[in-house]
Image (cartoon, rainbow, N blue to C red; front, side, top):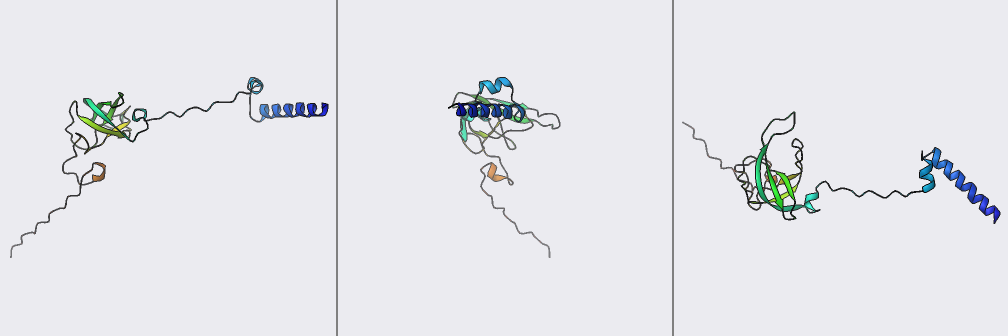
Length: 157
C-alpha cells in the first residue's frame, strides 16, 4: 500500500517536471489541469447556411472601385436572401440587365480586389440574363456553343 502510494507520488512529480520543462506549461496550468475545448470552425460563407447556392432579391445595384493596384468599375448588387440575410454580390461578365426587385441565384466566390465581396451571382438563372456574344469561358455563364457560319469567299477570276 505504501509502496503504491510512493510510486504514484513519484510518477506525478516526474510528470509535472516533464510538463514544466518540455511543454513550457505554467504552474497554474499544471495544477488546474484544464482540458482545452476545441474552437468551433467559423464558416466563411455564413450567409449560404452551408448550401451551395441561395436565392435572393436585389434591392440595390451599384458600382464600386477596387483596391489599390487595380482600377476599374466593378458592378455589384445588394441582395436580400431567402434566409433574411443581406449580402453584397458581384455581377460577373460584361453587361447586365439587373434591376431592383429581380431575383438572382447566388453562389460563394469572392472578389479579391473588392473588400467584403464574398459572393458571386450565377448568370443564366432566374432573371439574371446570359451575356450576349460570349465565345470564351461559356461554361461559367451557361451559354450553348454557337456554330460559326463560314461563308465562302468570292474570288475574281
